[in-house]
Length: 197
Image 1 (tube, rainbow, N blue to C red):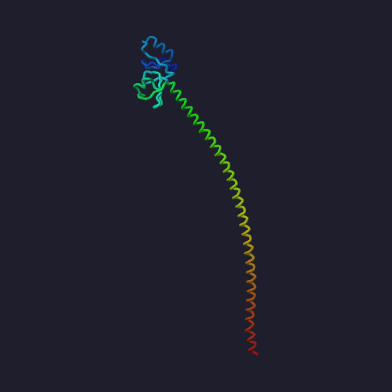
Image 2 (tube, helix red, strand yellow):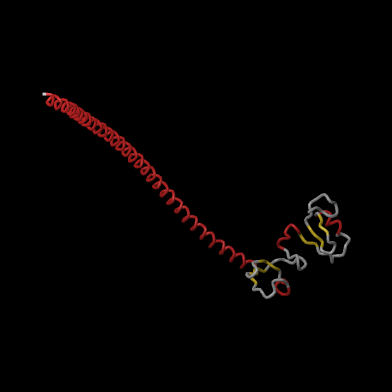
């Protein structure tokens, strides 16, 4: 935020009684002639001060709400009844938790890398099997096509032979029938000749 007095420089402190933010020089000038009852707090470290209890330091940690509070927060504020840890103890516990989580994450990361490598190897094997299967299907298809063409050619030759033999037999039968018919034509004439004699 910007200084509420000069509106130029960045504010570095706040006066609770004035309810203004000040840059360093404006804060010194404004509070030089004011009674020392005004409390000025450093807002650059505001995240370490309690906004609910006159900017007291946040020195206690609540496990239940996973939040820091001042002593008054635990006595009569929003963290009342919560078990509190000192900042130092809370930092140690949080570091231990983070270390455990980091260890679990590293272990999971290692397992994940191993799983990814195994999956990659399995994919390569599957790809090789797929290529072999494609080649086998292509080869079988080619053999079937050749066998089908050979069978078709053989059947055509057999049909031609069968048709040729049938036509020859039919022609011979027709010739025999023609001869028999010619013989029949001759009989009546021969009978007539006999009658005439």
